[in-house]
Image (cartoon, rainbow, N blue to C red; front, side, top):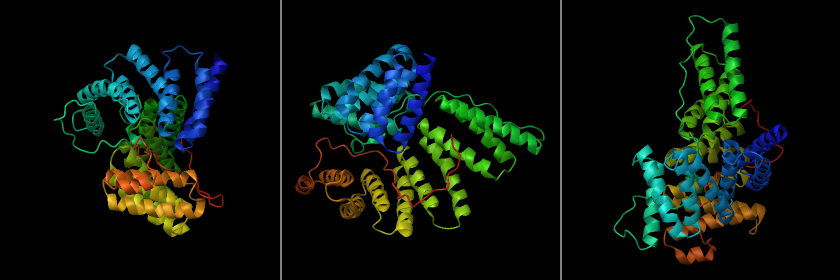
Length: 412
């Protein structure tokens, strides 16, 4: 059993890294290997459930909806048994299963699940929360498709995007210990205390205990700020905190720290470099997954200009930035801007990769969905739009050539 647990942890780290980098096909194969090791654990073991959950998410982002449905159904059953049918995490998985049925046009199965998830999230988060609004609008669309509740009105488009996939474990009540306020700490004491908090955070993060890691890193950051530390420990602590907050889907909190990181980097670099461009890309990604589309747009636009400045207007990395920018403009209903971004990305990828390359096809599908949404059906047909109308919600990883290197800092 001990050997199986170690293999499971090794698989987890590899799959998590691949999935974070957008290498979903590779991540999928590792998650399946991890799930095989997890079979030795009890059915209600949290580690087994988390592997299934991440595999299900990986399938969702690859649009392998039929493969994801059985996993999502099992997870709904597990969370319902262990946590209760009214628990928030159970509602998250119910909502995910409903979204799978929705994109498969199985509205009869989607409707009761959406209604159930909406009731729980409405109670916990309130009517104005973005998750509740998205669920409500999707529910209205499904009910209309079934001929029900024709008088209900949605407030925004119910376009399904990848970022609507919910992760569990995000809303646990975490009691933060009071920040350390020793009377006067020597430099040695500060260094020792910071190292202990940081090492404890790393240990907790390696166990996927991200909330506990967040507590330790919050303490470490408090020490940094109280003692006006400006060396590499400040960058390292902020980077690690952004990472563990992101893993809990606390993307907007992570973005607040990432803004500080970007300011530090900009001062250190003294101008536009790949490091500052990458930092802007990370910021846009955090705001996107946090649901703040306008902030994401602002950073994505500057990021694109920096990549153009560094590598030239027709570099493949610029095309990736344009795809991300077009996605944000599309979801923000800036349709003309989105069309221009998709066109520019399409031109670059067609020249560099060819018309049949999967990355070129990806832009075509997003462009076609945009045309359909703006009622330009004939043009959309010409683009061979995909049947589900699913706008790819993953953030595209900027692939750079081997000649480029990034100065890396240690993170958890």
